[in-house]
Amino acid sequence: LSFALSGPGVLTRTLLNAGVRVIALESHPAFFSKLQSLENSLDGQLKVIYGDFFRLDPLVTGAVKPPAVCSDKLFEAMGIAPVPWRADVPVKIFGIFPQRKERNTLWRLLFILYECSSIYRYGRVELNIFISEKEYKVLTAKPGELRTYQALSVLWQVGCDIQLLHMEPWSSFVTNFKNGRLAIPRSTLLPNDHLCLVRLTPQENLFTGGLKPANSATFIFMVKQCLTKPRSKLIDRLNSWSLGSAGRLLKALEIPKYVETGNVYPEDYKRLFCALQNSSVFAESWFHDEVLESIRNIN
Picture 1: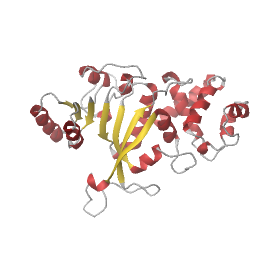
Picture 2: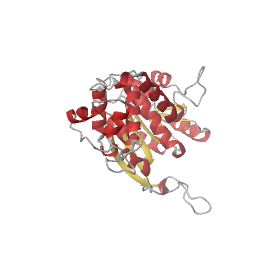
Picture 3: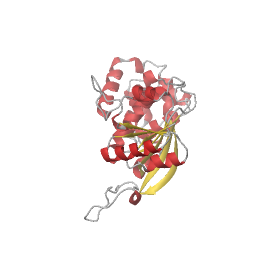
Picture 4: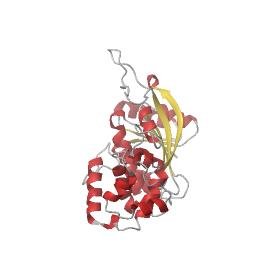
């Protein structure tokens, strides 16, 4: 079973032609009408729902007004029940991220992934999404690539297996403005000539070694704080949290004592976090206050 974030319907038709049973979410009136006609011509292979995936589970009180959608009602209406985290992928989602909100969308999905909330309450939901080339470069950046290696890189690489399925030139998706400029602005620091179809499959072993949905916000805060200044020393960051045994901790984890935060591997950030769970630093109230403030700033 696959969800398609439909738009003009290119992805939806591709999935249907492959024999996949598809649930299409669409909020644009013209596209919605065309998809309904397609639905009526098929024998139950396509279900069209008026809704916007990028307005899923809004933080509002009271009734949710369409095109906003509640994931629990959507999944339950389709007969999709939660499965254990280590079970097979229960649902595959296909779509194109809105360019104006691409970075915010990646952060929001990251939070609900680590919290096991919204769509991830149902298990390891697989995303197959078109994102800009520049954001793909950030998601897959390696330690030492200081322009691109960010908290977003570490957290997505810890959380998901990231596969590049296809790269398509922007010209296949967008038209030029009347003045001749591309409708999608070029990036000055990173290549951004393509949309990248990327598969994000949550890691089966994400919640191991002490990392849990309940403390995931603290892990996100720790990584974000460490990579605010990627040329700073990791040991200095740990000592700023009043952790007097930082040197011994890094030695025990076989992490170089004076490594810069921008040179620490994603899996080492997770190992460091799990080791810190056994120290008193994350039990201090001031640390939790900073976590909450950091989350507010990201959201």
